Image 1 (cartoon, one colour):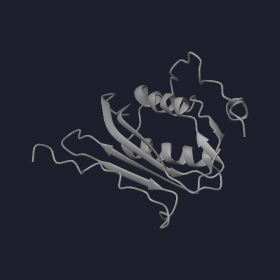
Image 2 (cartoon, rainbow, N blue to C red):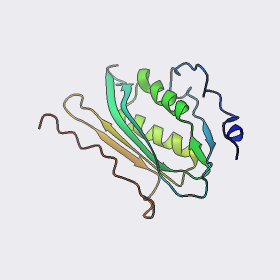
Image 3 (cartoon, one colour):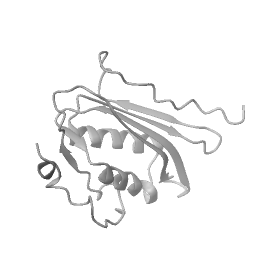
Length: 155
């Protein structure tokens, strides 16, 4: 599979692209997996994810970790960055943001397996961690711990 074949259908990579105003409007793109047939894990980490509280409009902050085992598709990283950034002005609860990201990626990529950990910073004194995965983790592929400790504050 040539590089031109892999990237031929992309609309955002290598071009100036505006940040989508809403996650529903964001275009997530995928490319054929040039290593299809090889089982391996991919990790994306977004340590500065932001969204808005749907009730107060105040910002919420999270550290997201997305792991997946690709099958036939890879997510194009610029489109993923733009998609995640589109939550910046979007009002939704932590659970909704985390699970909707995981579900949208799973629908787009049809991976062998996918998980997302949303490690949300405290608001009102309570941190919320949200986890979603498409099924049991495969036992025969190395998938490291997400490495984000539980929130401890100053303690």
